[in-house]
Length: 110
Length: 234
Image (cartoon, rainbow over all chains, first blue to last red; front, side, top):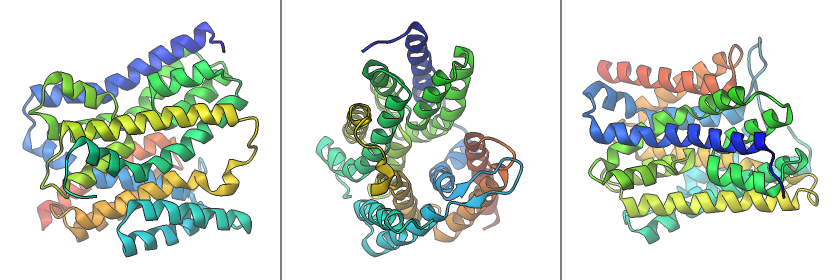
């Protein structure tokens, strides 16, 4: 149980950076009137950011070259997506996804 | 997920995402343990910084003795997507007090944001302070506790990936993006599919030439602009 001074400053500094990124937009949005184009722009944020977050797990970056597929994640994504289509339940997507990945790892696939 | 916006409904709705937090939280704890961070530092990172992927980056930078300024800048870059998410989410809470806005804002994550966007599809575009706080607080506590448990267990479990838990987070985003796709009637299915394809293409080409986090940001912004143009054409 110990913490160096560098670790303490890292935690406090990064904590400040993070909370400002999160909370300041709430202050601005509350006090300013948003122009129509910005509201239009923001209406696409949910679908785009979630798609990009998915892509982060499905692609492997090869700096300087084209990306390749993360085969294990892509394979496990198939039953997970099917579970979503069939049940429309987030819980089922997660449970089926974990099970699929465990099976893939058991047979050392991907 | 139903239309109810009570605190209790929030706790109920956030439960499926908890698996993602537990999986990644345990992984972070184990990584932190192997990087020789004490439990106190793990707790500090999880409860004060509270920034998922940024915590992994901070840990590796601490291990490499990178300068504080570099650590702060990396944290800002990794978290800059939060500015987009918070600006989006804040529109639902403009009528609430500043204090309540700050309380919600300080605990927004990728997951609770995505969950809220799914939720408002079911409530005619409404969200409540009670519902959002419930989701935020459960996520916050589960994350913090999972990372601490991971740090304690770190010495015992050598290969947590064997059980597939690391896929929980990816599965959760797949589930959230699918539910968003089928329930956002405002944008509609075909427009969203085009935007998704565009984002995937941009991300695919960008990760070869820039960091993953920057590519994520570029793909997100480009996707929003593309969507706005496509909407005009309809």
